[in-house]
Length: 231
Image 1 (spheres, rainbow, N blue to C red):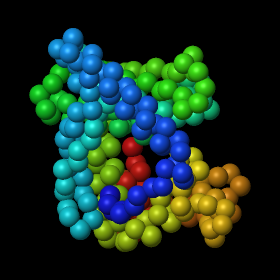
Image 2: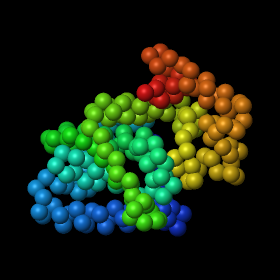
Image 3: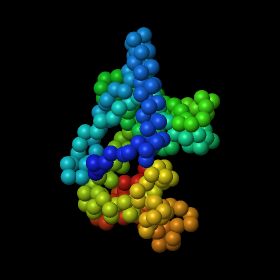
């Protein structure tokens, strides 16, 4: 939302480097297969909708869907084995992956293609082929619209209250904690406020940030955050 000007050193993000390499391999295989399959597209950019970008207003958002095959959106994820085991145990990947998949589905629909299902193939960045996990469900445009609405609420909150203020009150999740610049051990804020053993004032701050009514005007930062995270 804030369009940060960053470029990561592959030595500091090796797992992401592995993921990019695997995606490139899969893309090559898909392009080869597309010569035999009429309704197969790989790495196609699609317009999923609009969100509010601070300083820009409502802005078109584009994404690249890994694979489209006969009405099914397939997104490849290359996480660790632990993440895949957690998805298998719960029966589905993390929610942000699911919402992302439905956004890709909406992008294809807006481009004139039929979409019936969305799917996620999780392949381990270490481990074996048997560790893979496949998930799918029927395409649901309402999930894509909810994701766009949530991003817009965050964008407006950032514009009204500033990025740092929003980051201090936004609810945390465990995803990407190992690389989060706001929760490193050397920081003054070493843990997310969602942690059970987080200081009481942090947990109280999070509780306040989610207690506002969803349909009330967001005249305070906590209200804006609460509205953004209401699903």
